[in-house]
Length: 115
Length: 115
Image 1 (tube, rainbow over the protein chains, first blue to last red):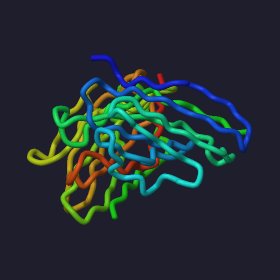
Image 2 (cartoon, each protein chain N blue to C red):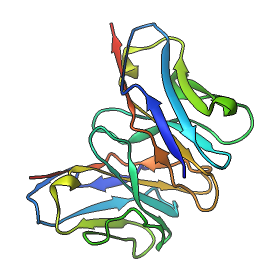
Image 3 (cartoon, rainbow over the protein chains, first blue to last red):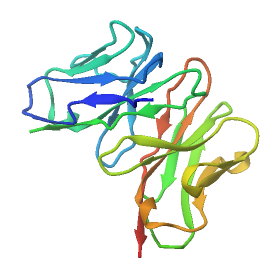
Image 4 (tube, one colour):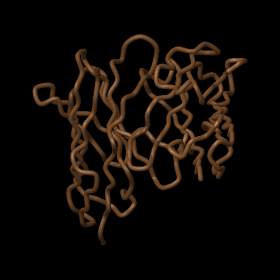
């Protein structure tokens, strides 16, 4: 099966600019996650979707970050305006009941550099 | 709240030597425990997981981990390191309940393998 697709792989922007990342999960996976991985740290959950509904967005900085999964398939994560501390790799992952409890399949990530 | 502590941000072993990466967790409920590996510029790949049942879990690439409830540990081992094992390894915990996810990751341990 095809993996989790993410784009772009790399993005460099200046602070206060905006950026959007796209994720296409594995076909049939109802649950989609966005994680933020800052250099030297483990991934941190930003938002979790079940189909097109939000399950957990408690750690999403809602003043600048937004995410949507309108049709319950692909998803977009937006940052506006970006800050220096947003420099990180943004990982998308998906899972299904068939793959077993909490077994997430990750994409390669989108690396953001904010100057 | 759940948390994960990985002892040692960097571990270096010689090729053929034992690999031991340490992980301790904190959880108020029976945990689900995971080890993921991340190669440079790639997403995270599941190595192995513990949910219930046998406490010694075998994963891919010859890795295994043992769940020790009394020690709140889930250390990752491999009898003989290969050069291809050089990567960053992340331990993660979830409560396994409710909807799938959310994984709490440790900060990671970078494994270097010397020829």
